[in-house]
Length: 580
Image (cartoon, rainbow, N blue to C red; front, top):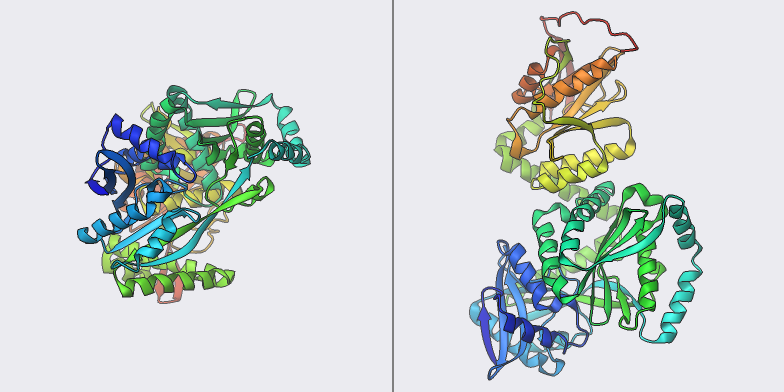
């Protein structure tokens, strides 16, 4: 067996045909093993992964291959490891051991000290080959369980008939379909062409990101690389007929999606989501149920694979499953023992939920301190223990020029979809993610109203909030503020993405929003830390005047609050009638 190493995935049609022929020789062919999948990963993530494509030949015939890569931690991983639900060495099972031995021998020569092979099917012929090679190579292996992937097996007509009967008796499914039917006709539509898929992706990606935000998480589609990968994958798989975007429609409105595949007799539930506005109808589960019903009627489909993840809803419809494992191969005894110890410790911690939550909280706090050290140095860490933080409160005046807007930007009420757009545009920094999750929680609680300054394309430029009452917390003071007049409306937690700061967006948003509040008979206030002179300048340029300040002085865990008034009083405000 002759091994040829490529440091890229060649754009080669002959290789594509030979590669995909080998995929069909696998124990269970998967779309994740195809040439198109690896090419899409290479094109989307080429800046993060250095491919190591090993092609095995007998004379001029391609008989095996594996697409690996070196990541930023200098570990060798499956090229598709972060995108594919299953990864493997590709080729006929009878040649798998020789393929594994040849590739591992070359990796040793290349000086690769550690392999992290994720999402390897437990039944694959590759697993015993990897275990056996530890006896004749410099590598030691550690295999641990990874994911149990739920499936619906439909190998026989009897199984298909039985599954349809089971689904037909699910009253919850019928009730939710009937409820949505009162709004519009309920049907499933499938998109296969490249043009239709690319056109449908933006709405799907926004809904997916919004759904994750509503659960307190940043979804993977907030990443530009991940969105680029799905677009490239759709373009490459569509000509082969292997990709299908399925949508549950209520009238002409899509309320649930599945970015999925049909390949090798499998219908794959890969990346689903649903519209949060229809959550009470369980539209995602309704879509999955309808797809399984359609699979039962299709002679070419013998399983519906629900992939990675142990979501509870999958248990309601599945009758089978598939285990995957994570394999660590290392030439270092110390690294091998560390890997074993880390896994055993993690398993023990997960068995005690309170302990796991405490450790996660501690790790999050440590990460925050590290980020503060990177951003502000030792001074920022010192200030978190010994500090004197002053917050200035400003009252808006009826300036002659109330609205300082550019004319093209607008202030719109913030909703989950607009927040998702923000996440997809600016989710490249830790403070951005923290703000977005905080904002999503506020939207859920409905105790305050969010607003966004958006450009003509609908992209948010600045976000801020208006409190419903005087009782709200001020970041940095860690307490409520009750010193504002009874008719005041605080504008707080203003935020501009790092990439577009110092362009006047905060001033513009404050100006437009304050004028709107004033016209509604409300008295706008805002506040900013003295340590943030840019925010203070923006507020004053928008027509606000400094009125008083609160200073919090901290010494380790002790603190006290000091109130100060500014000598310059704001100009008298004109009375506004309740009808204004």
